[in-house]
Every structure is written in structure tokens, then in C-alpha cells.
Image (cartoon, rainbow, N blue to C red; front, side, top):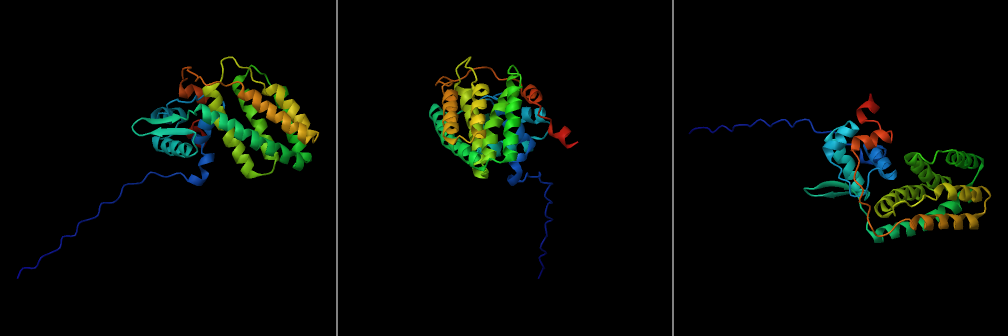
Length: 255
């Protein structure tokens, strides 16, 4: 009787797997931060295609890194991903845009109120310093102005001493940036440099009722800048966008 020999097949060694980024730290990832900065400054417009190759080249990293960053931004509804089409900067609908401003009125009334309740010596100094930066800033520097004006609202939320409110404010600032970029009337003036000193002064004076009213009026003025017609301007080159807003490539940042 012949013995049958079992032939043992050698298992193939799995090739080196691509390192995955820690999802808990994705908000601090340089690619995520670079894209968010470009969106908040309205350099990356709603509907812009975010090609993996172009982003990898512009930000000095790999396609795998870009793919993970885009998936994270899609989970935050900042990016839209379509099968066989790729990723695009999220383009809100008109109804979504209106809802964003409605949400901001509620959230920012709460942050102003809490900021006044908790305002201490350090908070006063921080708010005064930011107001001085806005007052001394060259309004012709559009991109830096957008960062400064957004930082004012985030600072008020920070002074409120509530991390959840701060996170919600940051998210709504991004979402309304997309709404404004999508629906803003051409040539609409930015009222923020005039409104922020009044709001800041009322917060410093602890005049809660007037400060909340001033913030609500400010948000209404911003919302008046939008209309249900989309912006059809051409997209800029991604490498130029990230270079102009000061986003360093991942490779040079890690060097």
C-alpha cells in the first residue's frame, strides 16, 4: 500500500502593508490641515476635484496618505467622494447653506454668552490682542484677512470654555465658508472688519444682551451676501494654492 504524502505548500509572505494613519489624530494631519486651510480661505472652491496625484505632488506625500485624508474629510462632510469619479470639495445646497447660518446664530449666541460669563484677565488680554491685529491688518491682503476674521469667531468660542462648542464653531465656520464660496454675490463687501470691533468691545464690557444682538446682526449681514446662484470661477492650480497660503509639503515639514 502506497503512502500518500501531503505536500505542504509554503505560505506566501504578505508584502509590507501601507502604514495607516491614526484616525484619532487625523484632524492634526498636515494634509488634512492644508486642505481645511485652503477651504476656509476660499482658495479651494466647492466642486473642485481633489485628484490624488495632484494633491500628493502639491503636498509632497503619497497617494495613500492623500486617500486617507480625503476619507476623513468625507466623514466630516467637507469632501464628497464618488465611485469611479474621485473626490471633490463639498458643494452645499441652498437649503443646507441657510441651515448652516441658522445653526451658527444659535451656537454663537451661546459662545458669546459663555465667554462673557467666564471672561478673566487672560481672556481679556487675548481678545484685545486679536482685535488689535485685525485693526492693524492690511485689508487688501484678502487671504490673511479671511483667516483673521475666522479666528475671531473661534476665539470667542475658545473663551466660552466648552470644547464641544469650540469644535462645533470650527466645523460651522468651515461649512459656512463653503456656503459663502458657493453662493456669494460677486463684489459683496466683507463686513467683518467693522463688526468685530463692536462685538469685541461689548464682550469686554460684559454687555451680554447687546453682544449677542451684535453677533446675530453680524451673521445676518454675512448671510445677506449669498444668493441661490453658484460661483462659476475657474479653479487655481493646487500647488499654487498651497504655496500661497503657506502650507509646507509633508516631506519638508518632516525633514
